[in-house]
Image (cartoon, rainbow, N blue to C red):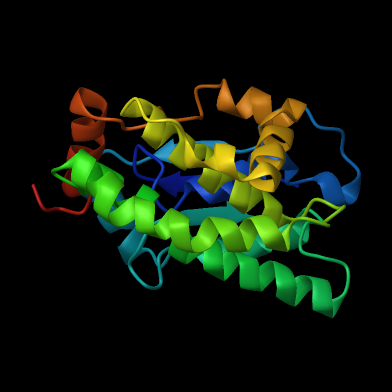
Amino acid sequence: MTTPTLTYFKGWGLAEQSRWLLAYGAEVSVGVTHTGPTFRNVALSSFSEFDKLRNDGSLPFGQLPLLEMDGLKISQSQAMIRYIAKRSGLAGGTLAEQVRCDMIAEAVKDARLGVVKWPFSPDKDAHLNDFVAPLIAKWYPKFDAMIADDKELTYAHILIAEMVSSYNLMFESKGVPPPSADYENLKDLTAKVVGLPQMKEYLESDKRFPFPAEGEICNSYVENVEVVLGRR
């Protein structure tokens, strides 16, 4: 299998979940031993690059991210996530397991909106208190209960861990204790996933963009998005 290529902006956004799944190992299902992050991370820097992808048919809906894998060009973040999960043996073994994973993944997409919107929020304190806190109050108890008796790792668990890890960084950047400390199952799952050798390697590699807390890193990401989309 050729090395998967993930194309996006210079930051997390809608691509980070796929990066975590690719880092876990896109070749697990064919028995290849993990050797670290097995994907290329391409960050666009100009509108011309983005426009070329739109014009050559790589982006049928005109949107990023883009995953090139197994000779396919896959757009739409949820489709990418599911393809990687199936390719990696993380989508569940039975139809019942698969639909359960998909239900959780859809819920995580809603619960994770605070991560996607964070860099673009002009008031980070208000974003944390008025937008993120209600999301966590709504979703964390449900996720914590759902995974309480789970034994096998699926893509749904990796998505939950990515979300919790992202929110942890968000709260810590403001000097606030992460709310995941109050949810034992979420805390344990996140520690398990980020502690996996291949995940640790990705999280410590240059493929991992820094958390856009505030200031220069955050402003740089927002500017990159605006430039690539031709808004500046």
